Amino acid sequence: MLQNSYYTPSSIKRPPPPRATATRPIVTRNPLRYRTIPIVFGSITLFGLSAYLFYLGITLSRPSPTPIHSSAALQPDVSARYDDIAGSFDDKVEWTETLMGISKRRMELVGMARGDVLEVSVGTGRNLEGYKFSFSDKKGNGKGEVKSFTAIDKSGEMLEIAHEKFSRLLPGIVGVRWVIGDASVRSAIPAPPKSGDERSGNKEGEKYDTVVQTMGLCSVDDPVALLRCLGDVVKEEEGRILLLEHGRGRWAWLNGVLDKFAEAHAHEFGCWWNRDLKKIVEESGLAVVDAKSWHGGTTCWFELKKPRSEPAQEVAVEKPETKTKKGWW
Figure (tube, one colour):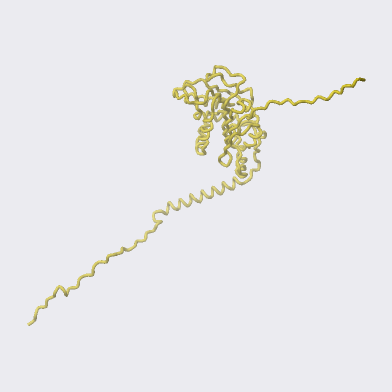
């Protein structure tokens, strides 16, 4: 008789427990997948930019067959160009001046003006917002430092635009004088007004407390004569001539670039950007109170003054001794 066989629980093998650190298979993906087209176009763009920079470097380093001299005496007068570009001048220079920080420098410079102020080569009035006018305007702050303001420029078209800007800035104020003339001619500059009213007449024999000029030495026939003329109309010793100009820089390669493109720039903007500003200031005879420069020395800030002229001292002349003839006694 067959006996039934029974399995006890102890005879059944249990499955092994799962591993505590089970690892998943690593899937390797192509990092460049779906990026082939951007990489190709980026490589082409980088190559094109590198080629352009290389070409630009070769072009700028190549000496010009007919370099433009930096002496103002040898450069033709192109200041008449300002009448043609007056309407578009602000649009042409706004972006560049903002990017290079020149607009900020303008505001800092004219913020130093005080008293009776004369601005030479006022142009389209790019400095007007920086002055601390003390006219009785609607703002009524009374904290201004500019008692009177006289603006002069050779270009009547530029001067008209500056006048319109001032009217929008300080509506109702008519005390500013707008003069069309060449500031390098002494007789073209009137004396300061008796008051802020333009009809008050001139203070004959008086001089200005502050003279301002920005980007003007590049567009006159004789910049040295202009500075000497400005020295004649500013108060001696305490008066100030404030300049923000552009010209030659510190490095020969940079000056080579300025010389190469000076003529094209002059015919477009009416100014020669390769003049030696330091030499011009030295030859003017004015004393330098402060000087700063940026952009490789091509943008310069000058604070000048007219030294007080010393009175001529009388030199004692020794008279020859007169020999008296002795008498017989």
